[in-house]
Each structure stands twice: as structure tokens, then as C-alpha cells.
Length: 119
Ligand SMILES: [Zn+2]
Ligand SMILES: [Zn+2]
Image (cartoon, rainbow, N blue to C red):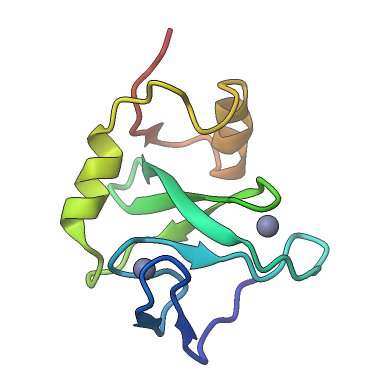
């Protein structure tokens, strides 16, 4: 899937990053979609996903094409940022709420998404 081992500059905060997402602001770059087409949009962190085995993943959405993906959290990540995302009340959800079902499928249907439930 994603190959970002060559280092890249975070479009959001300017930090040089060696992993697939920026440890400071948790943004990423949308390199390729499922068909392998390069998008280049900024992947913005919109939520945090906790799997049933206790592993955390960051949910990102591309600002350009709207595609969502998850990325594994690393020990270098900014935990304050993660908590602010995890606890942020979503006055306006970053995507239609029906999308959460799609996301649950993407992520194997096991776990819970850490954003405010609207129902
Ligand atoms: Zn950044
Ligand atoms: Zn994109």
C-alpha cells in the first residue's frame, strides 16, 4: 500500500517526516488511491479508532478527494493531539454519518470509533 520511507515534508506543519504520518500534527499525504493513482492531497486526521485488541489507529481523510484511510499510531506521535482528536465534540462531522458504517467495514468491523456519537 503506502510507501513513504524516503522522508517527506509535512504540508501542515513543515516537519520532515520519515513515517507515513506526521508525528506532530498527524497529517499525511495521500500518495495513492486504491487504483494506484497519485492524489497528493493532505490527509487530515479526523478521528481515532481503537481496535478490540487495544491497538490505536488514526483515521485520516484526504482534503482533496475525500478518501479515508487509517494509519497505525506510532510511539512518536503527539499524544496531546491524539487526545484532542479523540475527545473533540464534532459539531459538524467531517463526513456524512453514514460513512461510519463504511469505515467500520474498512476496518474489519471490530472496535469502536472515538468520536462523539450523534444519535
Ligand atoms: Zn505535521
Ligand atoms: Zn486524495
